Image (cartoon, rainbow, N blue to C red):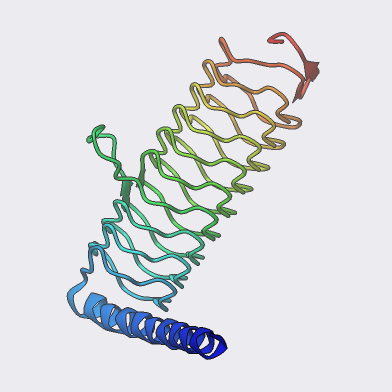
Length: 248
């Protein structure tokens, strides 16, 4: 009985070891394939080292890049529908005009997963981020100018000093997000959930905040010149003129 249990345990350990070796081999093979063809849809690339790689307009739709190192990589114009980038290192990566989500197919989920990804200093200008999951992501100093974040999940994300000028965030979830010193000038922030968010010192000049929920948000020192706050919910909201409770 004891011997049988020991044998079963030994077989399990050996099997797991072989799986690990097999996975590492798959990542290595797929990395070479990607660099050679600039395409690796639905590939297993978890933990891959692609730092500084030129992946301009690469097709990585459906690929698993969780925990991958893509720091400084060129992903401009890349197709990243359904791509798993959770926990990936995308520091200073170029994601201009990258396609990470789409509203063209309501019947199919095409959004990339960037939960807890590090996008510090990344360039996401003009990127398509419709309904993308960026919960807990680090977007400090990221450039999101004119990016489309329609209904994106940015819950508890760090967007301090990020550039979101003229970006579309209609219906996005920014619950408890850090937006200190962020540039949101002329941004579409209609129906955004800003509950508990920190917008201190943020630039919101000419931003559209129609029906935005700013309950418990911190807007101290924010620039709200010509911002549209019509129908916005202000309850226990810290504003440049004091605590606002008109929407309670």
